[in-house]
Image (tube, rainbow, N blue to C red; front, side, top):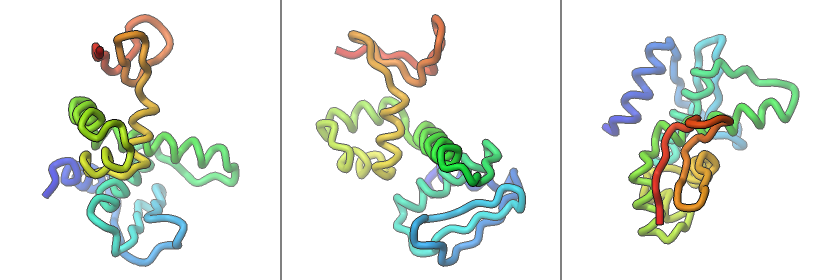
Amino acid sequence: MDPKLLTAYEMLDAFGIEIEYCDVPSDRDADTDVEARHMRVQWDLRPRTHRCTIVHELAHVVFGDVPSMFGPVNAKQERRADEWAAKFLIDLDDFRRAEEVCLGRTESMAVALFVTTDLVEAFRRLLFRVNSTVYVEPKMGAGQWASRVRVS
């Protein structure tokens, strides 16, 4: 089994989340009720989508996300879950290699990294380039980043 997916399952178990594989509404692949400690996942997802969906839903659990009646709040939660899942599943060196080999094509990179295109795009949102340096997860202030990589 995929070690990252296994880690995600272990984390869900530690949070006490029960996973149910069933039919979910057609506009989504899964949903999670953090308070009830219950996750519903579409039963017939392809392996790559399944992997990303489980980790995306894990992010909602980690952040304690509760659906809101306000669209911008839900959009922020979804964006944050995608970015968290991207960091969890994509290694920076693998991303660099895939970007070079796939010439930056999102779909090809997603296949190479065994993630969805949404997560490739989310990972890209975490990058910031200044001259010959790429910063991962830059924040305000000197030295505030998760990683810094020299590029040509």
